[in-house]
Length: 385
Ligand SMILES: *Cc1c(COP(=O)(O)O)cnc(C)c1O
Image (cartoon, rainbow, N blue to C red; front, side, top):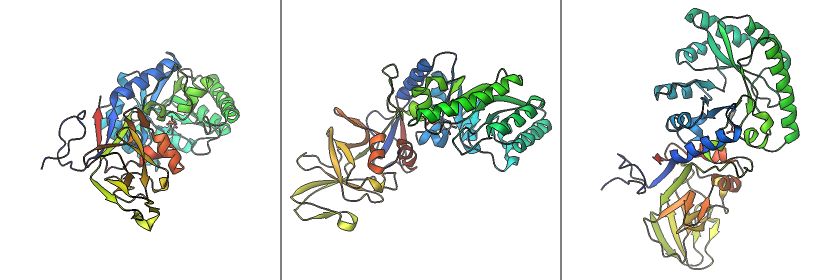
């Protein structure tokens, strides 16, 4: 039997793929989103496409070249592994590590892969300088200041000390100075406070002669909802995937990049009183038609969506019945006249309707980021236009 080929829009047969569950990643939508955000922030503001965690599960090596061709100036990832993977995929542009480097000896591997690390301590700056001296080439890095996220970063007070050291250290190049917003989607006052504290540090840096250093603060929510946080560079991740965490102006048309699809693999008619799935938490109160889909929590369907989730079949929202199992979910298809083989959309458009990652997030009590990152390796990603 031939392997399952995905929908007609996918690129040819995929060896060894049989299960009809997959995610489609639209490079055209991603390119359009990068261009739209770039247009919103305007030409002097540079754009770092944040592609950490394999582009939130979308595929970083697929999207990085698209980002760069569409106006992104640099790429942001979290770990050394993620940066190295993009270098191996042929990405030549600057790649900034937004996460931590630990232990500090790993700066050797960072510089070998020509990655740009973040530094959060004087000790790390010393270490990076020592390695750069051994290699015989100055090391570019970004200095991170904590203005209210409480995760990684020097306090603004300590930043002065590190900036003064870097100003006198020829083996170090301060390519960027940055901080991270904690609540740009929910708390404008705190965002304003973070901006004010960060600007005080940037002034300190200018006074020390750092005039080419890119100062940056804005994630997606900041870049969209707080224009004053855009500064020299913005760092959007989720917005470029078409799932902005804040309302977008009409001048920023963003399209979802990922669709998640499957096919009905089993269909049955059950009498009233039949229970469905573990724990028998759903019981049919009448005769029903039930479809079984080959997708479950091992694929990233959260169990927490119990009693809330819907999927699209024939362009209609149909309820998921009973609890999510590891490999399958069951759906009410009563009266639709559907049979096995029919395509089902978990995330994306079908007919005139659309289900977003944001809806799955609200059903599961989480955020779209976690829905995307949760779509597991078991779900093959297919690149579409
Ligand atoms: C993840 C991350 C971003 C991107 O955040 P989005 O909300 O996805 O835009 C930007 N900056 C840093 C430091 C991050 O960790």
